[in-house]
Length: 308
Ligand code: AMP
Image 1: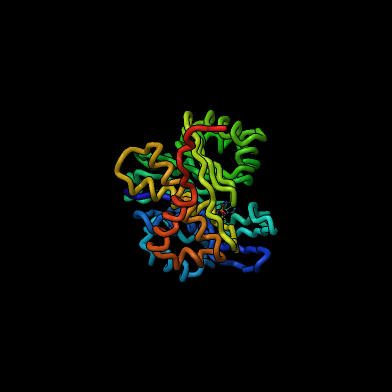
Image 2: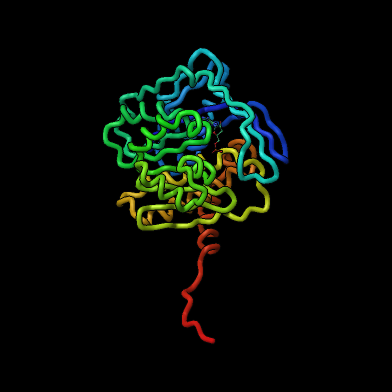
């Protein structure tokens, strides 16, 4: 089944302890769609400016991503500048330039309106809502957001959340959104805001899935080298949603667990290199092999009797 994503297509400038790059391909919709295109047909709703290199458009098209909803407007492309310290878990945003996103009003091509799986990537929550106004009867709507919107556009975000089935946030965002320090309490508070499921991403410490009656914990793949964490969250969401969209059955707990693991698998590739460099070259056998590694990593036998 197909997937629809609305989000940013960006030019990022990123600084990590291991290097620095200017105006490289980034954006929530870019990472998400590149990742999920391994699994299922993907449709993108986004905007770029006149300065967005055609080679990036060709790359996305070459991955089979449907770009009918990607428009090019006069002005500059959205830009984000971030820095990571040795503690690679959280980006410090140095600059955000909305540029063409400022006047963006998403219009879904008719062919997108019946898409069963919808991912509202990290953009202004009002734009996320505008997309939901245009889809007909989605099977599942997931969303992502970040501190920028929690701080600056909380009322609009709370409105969007009422229409969302699943929210992806990192632990700092969950705390900020819920006003709760403890992550479990924060997750419960978010479940009261609309979504029936919340996934809390914790960087190198893995991710937690909360439903009303279940919690599932998935580790991050233990990598010896993490190069650039940008896009890990959107790639996680792409692997997660791609797994849901390829499964014909109901969205049950077993499927959600596999989706969590696939999200972690795909994110673990993204962080190995700058920008989308690693996602560009990763192969299906590598994805399968890392999924199998995850099973080994987390397997353990039953306890048996406790004897003194
Ligand atoms: P993440 O997966 O959370 O690391 O997201 C990384 C991507 O988010 C970067 O490539 C940025 O271009 C994009 N981004 C950062 N800030 C914003 C924002 N305020 N709105 C939309 N996209 C953003």
